[in-house]
Image (cartoon, rainbow, N blue to C red; front, side, top):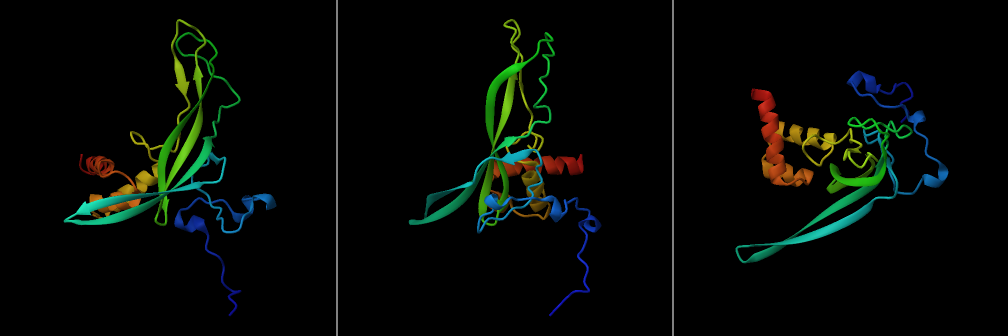
Amino acid sequence: MQYSNLKPLRQESFGMNVTEPEDIVISGKDTMQGILYFQSGMPTFRQTQAPCLVSREKTYHKNGASYCVRTDTRHFCGDYIDDYKDTVPYCPCCNCQLVGNGTITNELRHLPIGDTYTTLDVSRRRLRCPNLSCSYHYDCPIDFKAPDHLITIQLLSFTQDLLAMHMPLKTVARLTGLNKNTVKEIDLERLKSLYT
């Protein structure tokens, strides 16, 4: 059956800002069988290596019976693309030019893919003041990190959407891979923004 008279839907009509498929270029050597390439919504994150899968099993004992729960987590390693990587800022305290001080890596929880949790290991640069009397240092901020949590903004939004559907905290924690206390804090922040 041919559907040649149908036109594809435009993402703009749904309020989505998506690049056109011809803008995404994947070279032949980077393509692998069974690998999906899609945009993450984080243009400042550059993946540097293939993701690794870590499986954990935890045994619970209840009423004399024991049962095992297995969780899979996929780790994506990458770098934060700094807009000012070619420029070196100056110290706000003593006006000296800052020097490199290595990198720092943060692990952020990200949206689950299917029943597999995901984490991002984000490396970013550190700078320090060379003046010995000044102890100023600068860590490049991550623009896709949620404030006050080690999760991405996308996972924060997903968690808030699940909580807005009146799902129990424990269920949301199981779906997102977050601790139930973190989910409780997110829910409290969401309720405060709604009712204060």
